[in-house]
Length: 257
Image (cartoon, rainbow, N blue to C red):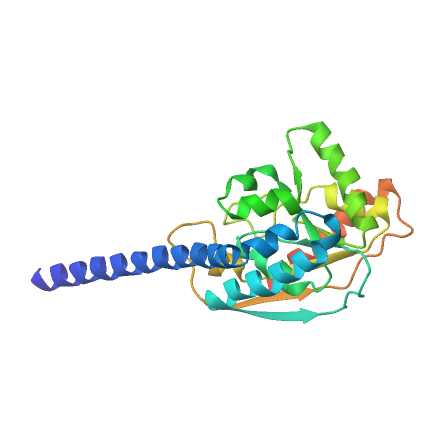
């Protein structure tokens, strides 16, 4: 009985230490998110006053924010590309969404400046939300006018030579779900604007930093850029077909990865 009691106590202590490690890992993430923003705040702010300076803002976010966060978390990106994006061309970037790291990894994967389309609730995140509302296209999925306005704002950004990024699951699915059903928005927009869809698979972000508090840890985070889906000859009625073809590519990769 004494031996069993000692083993039980040891397991409790080990579990407590492990949980403390998980919490500290998450605190460290938010420190890494905040510190570059504080350090470069004047420069970042200046680049949000005009849409013409967004490419410079993007490069700072990519190299001085996203990369330090990933490497600081011990999450080393490994990127495979079946096709490369052309400089100066606009694309619709889509990927599976399971983690806050998806934002940083997307910034690292794409050298072409792009604008996120995301839910307005992210504005509430301290510090990050301040810049999010200034440079991203926000959408209230409960408001038809907001969803319609996204197309108008996206067209303006595409006219400036930028790309658009949407996580087509429309939110973060339950942890048990490998890949949720896709919404039409990204594919309808790609067809309307005649831009290629660039599917990306993020394999490890859920394991490294999921939305479950007591989980995560450092390690490689793999991403794969699949071959693009051209939309030049597609019409609005092809939206569902395009959506499911893109999802099938990503689901197959996740199941085999």
